[in-house]
Image 1 (tube, rainbow, N blue to C red):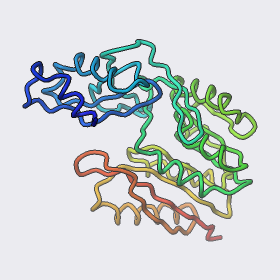
Image 2 (image 1 turned 90 degrees about the vertical axis):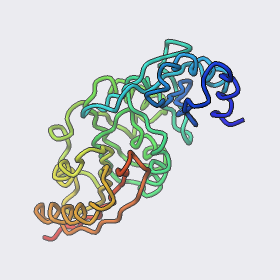
Image 3 (image 1 turned 45 degrees about the horizontal axis):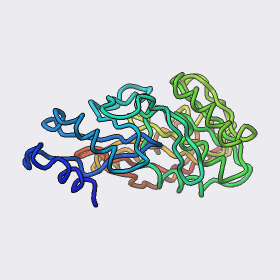
Image 4 (image 1 turned 90 degrees about the horizontal axis):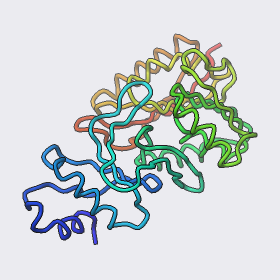
Length: 276
């Protein structure tokens, strides 16, 4: 039975049929993350308790209370039912991620992109992941290819789990973690490929990615939220920034997922070549 129909059947006679119930949830390990409309929030605890009955994997239920905030990408969730210990281990395509999804953002909607990118990477590359969080891109890449990955994370909480996940997946020989602002701690002229898994004004960080790429050039995967009508302008700006740093560029755009009304999550695959 579909989740929404399950909730409707369990809450029949308790919650009015006019109330809009959630159609699904995002499961991270044993934690179900549920998005509710404003008018449905008064039933959050009840919905949480029934959600525990829907899937035996679910031990904790949390509902979103606001948007993701700041450069450390702090999510806004509150626990409404189940186990109060929300530190969990999430398995994704053979990669294990330990984290607390109430304290750190982990988007299931990016799973296909993480898999796509890991297939593009070649053996012996040096990859720099500028916004690593708990290693969502870095660990997939290191699992797939014989590479060296330098994973940078500014949030100490995320950095702690990044270190744990490197060990959990046995990737100590392939992944090195750095704590700090990627604008300040990025290595220079070392990477064949740079991953920029941040969504807000990411193009402002492009100069630091170009500073990280080897002198001959390489590949940059720049994630960014934008309305579709701005794509052409963004690609023009990418080309201008690359030229300012002595590189010519060719850019392809991929739609990852819808983010919010009028905004979509895109990844810009930028191939850069030295103009020298």
